Picture 1: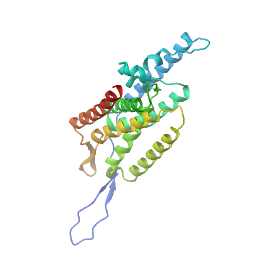
Picture 2: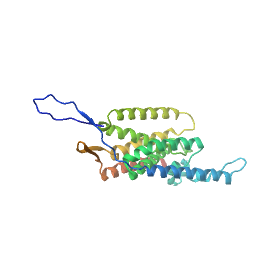
Picture 3: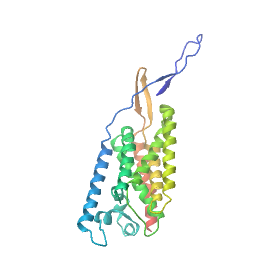
Picture 4: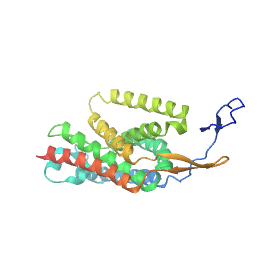
Length: 258
C-alpha cells in the first residue's frame, strides 16, 4: 500500500492522502523448491550411506565425511566445505526445521528478489556462515546444516522491509519486529552446546551485506489507478553486493587458514 496525496486548488481544503493498492510482481519460487528438493534428496543419500556402510559401533555417512565443515580438512585445502555443509543434515528434525524455514521465508523472498538474485543470497549466506564459523570455532570445529543460509534469508527479509518501508507501511514494521524476535530467540537457543551459533551470525552478516547493496528497491511508477512497481537496483549493484560478501568473507577464510 502507498499514499497518493492529491494537489488541490489553493482555495479548497487539502484532501487527505489516499491509500491505494499496488500489486507486486508474481514470480514462482522455483529456486526455493529446487534447493529444498535437492537437500531432501541428499539427506536420503545420507541415510542410505549409513544403512549400507553402517557397522555395530560406527555409523559411517560418507557424504558427511567428505562434505561437512571440518576445520582441519579446510586447512588442508578442501575449500568446497565452505558450501557443501548447506546440503547436509544430522537428523530428521534438523532438516525438517531448516527446510520449513526455507520454504516459508525463501518462497516470499524469491518472489521479490527473482530467481538468480535469490540463489546468490542463499549460497552467499551459507558461505559467509561457514567461513565465520571456521574462523571462530577452533581447529576441530565441525558443522552441517542449512541454518547458515536460512539466517542469511532472515537478515535479507529485515533489510528488504527496511529499505522498502515507505511502500509496505505497517506491514514492514511488523515484519521487521517479527524477524528480529526470531533472530534473538534463535541466537539465544544457539548458546546451548552442539549448535553452531557463529555460523548463524555469519549467515546473518552475509545476507544483510548482500541485501543492503543488491536487494530489491521498489519504486511506484505510473498514474493511478494504473500503478506498477519497478525495481531500481541495477546489475552493477547486485555484482557489488555479491563481490562485497565474497571479498570480506573470502579474506576472513584465508586469514583463518594461515
